[in-house]
Length: 638
Image 1 (tube, rainbow, N blue to C red):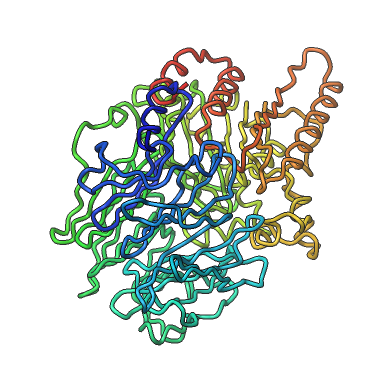
Image 2 (image 1 turned 90 degrees about the vertical axis):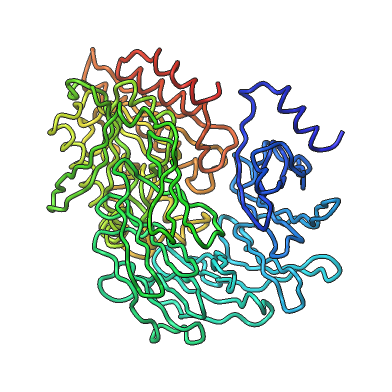
């Protein structure tokens, strides 16, 4: 029985709740490459949705637990395909190289690969560049060839432990860019896509606080950078043979309070995907005449999903929100119009509302919020509220579609997403105003958001819950210490709760890389004292806390389990001490630590995790969860 039949038989006989297929997909030439069951396959482009496909590699050969393909890259002439494969419970990835032909065969495999790209040299030979990841750090770049001239050599090593290396191939495949970055500074080297064995060319030596990213078109470099005033992203360009910063010419400036989500380059157009004042826009720049067309996208949209696209005539992308599945849109350059996917309109459009309001923080800063609730909800003050926050690394709150969020809105909940300082929703300055010795701004913003929600009639403290993931746990834990009376219950996932001790441990893989975000308490007394002011673990005191459910992962390399366990134990001790002082009749909060076996930093679509968190919230608020779990079955496989 061949690999194709093995996969089909396994899927037909396996109980539905025991498997889930995750597809990575790329189009190259006349083929589509993607995952089907436990195999890497390809099919003719027009037959991608049919069963007529060719099995290239069986993932089960790697002997991994539930492996899935995270990324696919095809060599220019389709002689080889490389796929990055990992499992749900690990961040480590294996890159498998398959030689294509009548009998596809695995040519090589490389462990611990992060980013990788193909180029073709002067002798028509395919060269694979890839970064090697050790302890979550990417410092080494390798290049490899296969077949008769097989070789594998280290090409570059970054010496500064606070920087990492990421590879990106320009849209026209003319240059491979080697991006050396930390949280606030970057440096880019160009590797000639036609002469990959030549030494790389430095565009601009790293300057502290200056970020830049590079695309290429017609012998010109288009550079997205924050250099100059204001310190927000702007688009510049220069000749490819004179790439240094003194030759950069300003080409396009963003409005203030604008987040640049992505940039896509086409033959005659540059497309910018933007978030301005918490709304999404697409700006289409005509490169022949420097014209600009700004398109305001539907108000329900909260996030972009970028499409891998090689069509020079169209720019496809998807829009999504936490309660609405992604919808396809295409901008057609020839017509100068945006077209949306036709078909059945999602009923959530009519049954729910999305609102955008602002809270005034204690220093007068206006903090945007995005709110969802049912259209026909009456007396919103009596409805349960789930608040989301992150506020770190200049990253936006995740607002992709989550079925459980939709089910909560259908069941009468209000969802509020608070875009506090430290995140990136309003641009680079928004991040700068919430990091290092300004981290308390994010806490003040979160407090202002919740008070504003209550003040405008959205729920009340006894029905208010708060959720966060990873670094978002810093603000949530801090709020539980400073203003616990605003909340009834909290759910945290892989939360960062012991900032001080973690940042003082330089043996941890990410401590040096994270100094730009949290500061250096080991060598800077000012940073140390400031972290002590907000660190959740350091500020636990005997008092009444909201009930807290924490999901942690046994093998989490990013947020050490030790810090979460220490936080939980100290919190329980403080609650017991407070209960003694309060006397009989005191209802102590529930503190639950759910340690998932295995696991890396997060398992986003773990149904067990989703069920446990929702069950906890309903029980803490005294709500009937019967209907919510019935509705969840429509979306999740139990």
